[in-house]
Each structure stands twice: as structure tokens, then as C-alpha cells.
Image 1 (cartoon, helix red, strand yellow):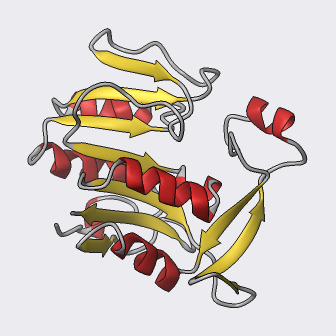
Image 2 (cartoon, one colour; image 1 turned 180 degrees about the vertical axis):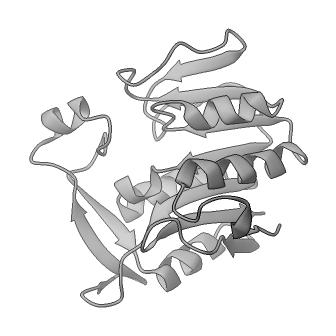
Length: 196
């Protein structure tokens, strides 16, 4: 899939996501939006005619949704969402996880195409974490406070941000094709289309 950055402002994450979700809607009919939060991506997919299930551990940012968008409250690492989905949205969640949690997440949805939006660490200052390279990111002072913050990890005080190369290597363990969408919408943050 090609992405023409001239269609939208380069730094507009939501406009870029809208173009990508529209393209996905041409191939797939149902989507699971993990860590849906504000549900803007769920609503994009719905607008493009997809059957949508949104999931988040918190409901504080959940807007009023159309009745045909299903919503599941729960931690996507622990709760299995009933149903079969053609494609999985993992937008803004991956970088809130430890390496172990990243493996759990990808294992749950192995064999499904994924649209991923994530930060990655610069090479400078990164360290080896087993077979991966990256940096730790402090999510918050304690889990109780973090669970109240809709933009923090729900499970871990410290998450792991891969370097770009490490991220692609990690994703390649689960997907046959990993496509980085360029240009980045934020320094060291962009979308990846991952296909089995």
C-alpha cells in the first residue's frame, strides 16, 4: 500500500490515519480498535463502512458512539474480545508496553493484519534488552495514578521503546511484511502496516 503524503499535512496524525483506514476499508470489512480511548479511529473506520469493535481499559475519554460500534471495557492484554476481525488497530498503545507485553499482544492477534502507530527510540542512548535495542520510558510514579491517566500504560510503570531497526525486527517475528509509512507524523513516531 502506498501513502501519498501530499494528500494531508505531514504532521496531522488523524488525517494520515484517516487515509490509511480508508485504504484498509477497501480490503477489510471488520476492525478491532485496541486501546481506543477517544474512539476517533473507531469512528473513522465506521465512517468508511467497517464493522467496528472498540476496546479500552478506561472509559474516561469514551464519547457517545453510534449504536452499531461495539465497545468492550477491559485490558486488551487480559480480555479476549469475542468475534472475528479482519484487521486490528494498535494506534498509540504499543509504546506503553514492556517487551513481554508486546509479545503477548502480538501473539494474541498473530495472523491478522495490523495498523500500528508508535514511537520509537533514537539510537543514541539506547541499550540492548535481550535481542532488542531501545530505551525504557517511565510511564508514571505508580500504577494507581497511571490507571487514572488515560494516556499512560494500564499495566507497567516502565515501557520499552524499540529503536526503529529493533521495532521492525520485532514486528518481523509476527508479520511477513512490515511497511513504514513515511514521512513520520512526529519525530521518531509513525504508522506501520503489518501484514501476515
